[in-house]
Image (cartoon, rainbow, N blue to C red; front, side, top):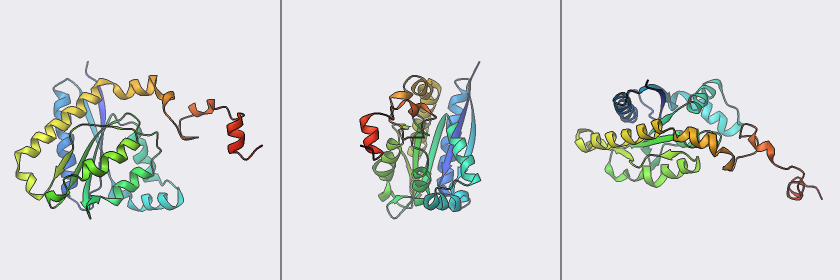
Length: 220
């Protein structure tokens, strides 16, 4: 009997419709098709960051997580795979996108498979995904698929884009169906460095009465 997987699309496109969302949707569609060939089903949820812009800004300056943002975080928590798509502004990923992922708990996305994608008006920005986005998602300890996706205006009529989408989608399906994330979280969670208070209580095994911890707390 096939399994059901949850795919989450995070789009930083600011228009409706947007090429950024279109690229993400094409990846999600191929993931669903390829999983279906393995007798697996995929449910897709889309997080449109433009609808969360105000709450993201408030969270950055006040650490207050609004209700829509809480829903987005919970959606990502239960994702089996993620597609992240951003427009390129001034030779970099959207500030809306980077701000969203910067306010997430560092432990939230550990071992989750991710496809990274970007769109721009010119091919001069083709390295933004590998040069800028991969570093952020490596810090969050996700598993980014080998194939990066980038689409400039002229790429939409190029069959090469379809081939890259197919390749990235297959890589994501392979990771989602392998159980990699579950294995890591079940068997290796304690070996990761966690921020205090962010590891679901597992960090409470820290010896708070050690000399080092007393010194850190200002004791003698």
